[in-house]
Amino acid sequence: MTFSRRSVIALGLIISIGPLWGGITKTEAKPTIERQAFGKTADGAPIDLYTLTNDKGVEVRIMTYGGIVVSLQVPDRDGKLADVVLGYDNLEGYLRDNPYFGALIGRYGNRIAEGRFTLNGTSYQLAQNNGENHLHGGVVGFDKRIWKAKGVTSKDDVGLQLTYLSHDGEEGYPGNLSVTVVYMLTNNNELRIDYAAITDMDTIVNLTQHSYFNLAGAGTGNILSHELMLNADRFTPVDKGLIPTGELRSVRGTPMDFTKLTSIGARIDQQDEQLRFGLGYDHNWVLSNGGGKLALAARVIEPISGRVMEVYTTEPGIQFYSGNFLDGSIVGKGGEVYAHRYGFCLEAQHFPDSPNKPHFPSVVLHPGEKYRQTTIYKFSTE
Image 1 (cartoon, rainbow, N blue to C red):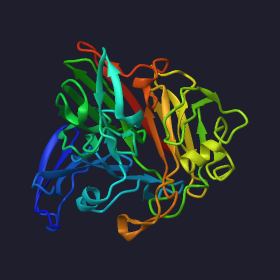
Image 2: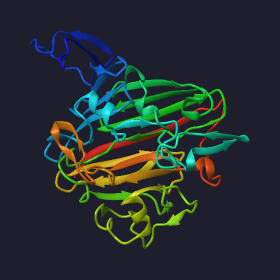
Image 3: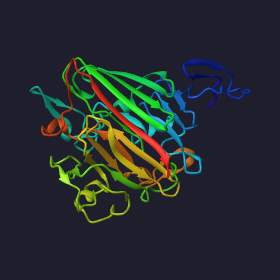
Image 4: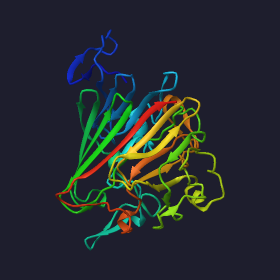
């Protein structure tokens, strides 16, 4: 695919520059935003791809389809950049076969039992798109919607604001929900995601981001040698359908204990009921700070490259998923095959099935209130 022009936004200055093949003189101002066409959906809707770059050369690419993080280039301890998120080289891959690579998730991230919940005495039936359960907003969730986009900048940061109006009844959810998500790339090598939403009717909201990470580089191998710390001493055990039982169980003495840095593969194949249900790790951890204030939730180290990722969030929970359903059937970027456990997810969230668990933190949003959530993925080396 060839593009004739692109736009660059540098510290608030919009500069139109010529053909990509025509001897471009790039501005030295940073951070920058570049926009280019990224293809069209099956019904002809155009999709844009935005490239954000900070003053250290860290780069993230985000498209308007699904608010998807298409690539994220961060340095290793020697300064060599690598793309650390799984995905595809073109839009067609995401349209054809996407297990939520890099996507914004809503209205409800994770699972709701049998796709049912009751709010104010009214029962709602959602799509049962994960066995008998509802997953990640339904058949056409926020990951498959086209978001309106505009670049935003501050003194040291560059970002992309995405907006979407989810209409009353969409995927079975009540109320018109107006959603704004801002991705900001900072000069501290942070990808900050600020979520906000308002509704005109009582509804439920649980937004998250679903990037699959491999800090050695996407497609380079499995993630079992990555070392993980989760700032949580409890988790929510699940049944065979991966629906929480309602218990908040201690991680002590179980394979779920990541209170200290532990390699992901150290206990993943132990004979444990929870690992058997999830085919590995696919569980929600109860963060120790309880949510509400931005706090460290997770730390991941890839020992060979030295890359470190820290996750900070205002959410009360985080879903750690170890790529158990990747099976080698997906051919990703550069023709690399994504085999079993080639990526992991850390999805900041409220707990799965919260609408049916009154003792879980509430996901109900009322008119006049504003849903807010902030999650930061911070990259460094050691």
